Amino acid sequence: MNRALLPYRPGPLAWGGIIAATCLVLFLFEKILWLVVPFVMALLIHYALSPLKYRLLLIGVPHKTAAAAVALGAFLLLGGLLFFSLPRLSVEVGSWPEMTARYLDGGIRLLTDSVRQLEKRSSLLAHAHVSRELALQIADLTNSFARKYLPGVAVTLAGWAPSLLLGPFIAFFMLRDGWRFKKFLGRSVPNAYFERTLYLLDQVDRTARIYFVGLLQLTVLDTLCLALGLWLLGMSSPLLLGLLTAVLAWVPFIGSVIGCIVVVLVAATDFPGNPGMAYGAVLLFLVVRLLDDFVFMPMTIGKSLKMHPLLTVLMIFVGGAVAGVPGLMLVLPVLGVAMVLGESIGMIVTDARLRARHAHARDLRERAACQGLV
Amino acid sequence: MFSGLSRRQLKIVDALLHDRHYLAGEVVFDLGEEGQALYILLAGRMAVLHPAQGERPVAELGAGDFFGEMALLDEMPRSAQVRALEDCHVAVLFRGDFEKLMESHAELASRIAMQLARYLGNRLRQMLAQRPPVAAQV
Image (cartoon, rainbow over all chains, first blue to last red; front, top):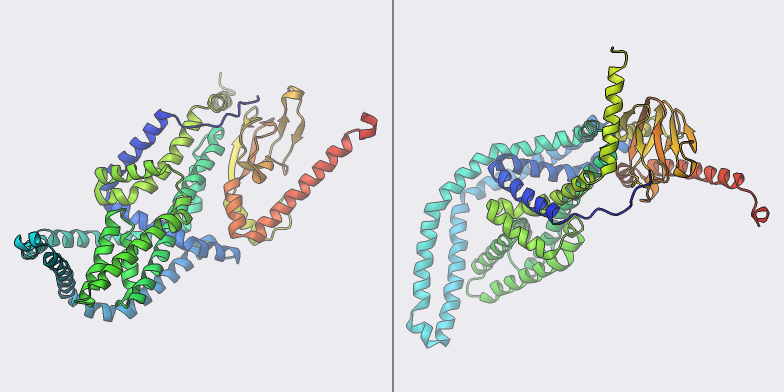
């Protein structure tokens, strides 16, 4: 009856399984990205809104009504924001291509000016006409880039728009019936494995919740820091730029680099002939990155994924190799959930007593079913 | 344990409870197992068994009794085995759900925790009353 109390530690085989499962899930996710993206969006909305639903439950509102009220409130808020910003947005959308070209020109000008400054100091660079060559190559690249890739990007975004509408829809049902789903899953588990399964479900939910809520908190902190810094530098639309770069940072490595380039482009265009502003923006970006990595990240997302930093970095590369940019974004939450699942399944599979109890219960049920039959 | 809760609060708790059915002879949990949930016996009888007493039950539980309550308070292993004496119907409150309840419905969770503390206090007093006085032992 007394059982050994040795804690279960996953071995190399279990770890191999966890990493293989993560890669397989990422590979499959990339194939059904049209469903994964709205699902992740739904999780974000669900975790952001569920505290409000709990508050309504506390004051006596039933589950269904509370979920409907919270969803309606969020929908009205979003609808209101869209309603008021749509006229301005529709005016601005028309000027987006022109604005993009202006900011790209600003960036190119900054780059060629910087190289020209270097040419003045280095005769080798001056003889090689580096700035002229650079300007020609960049112009060629931007023209061919726009021609080659932009139509594809536009078609992909248009194709995705309907599936993104699924996000709020799924989030509503998560809010309304999430607790029922948990009970439903619990009912399908045999008695012997019931407590462990509840624990497993709880851990998966907890990991995902801390990760996604942490991601939202991190985005808010990044946005505020960047916006404050950009405002102090005197740049236009600091809040919008801060938000854009904070959201871009959801993609590890690449996102931060793109965010930094965007800020530098804006600085170079808004302040032509003043490269100090662009360098200031880069410096600000580096400071916020450092704050992010060493202060904000451990405070928010770091709490959910207790994994070795080397494994984290390696898995980010693996995620990128297996599923590209979506792999980079999803590898950490998927790995976190795979770790919890792998450890829990390993714990259940290696527990001979639980298996014996399950066999005994099955035997009892069979005997009860056969009672009275000759 | 849920006495003193309003109808509204009971509804909230009900959404967290899981229904389980056990056949006579089925083990609910073992001694030494990590406890994750509190069980409320809705129908049937169960026996609490400890190896020190062999197959003689330490206690018998009937409808309305609850067991495994220490799992809500700490992560210590179960201190006895519980086995169904007849076909039983139980409601299960998982520790993770109770912790969430403490975060989202502090007042409700504190009422349950208070009932639990009263129950444990009573049990401690009963145990102390059953033990011979220290002077007599010496």
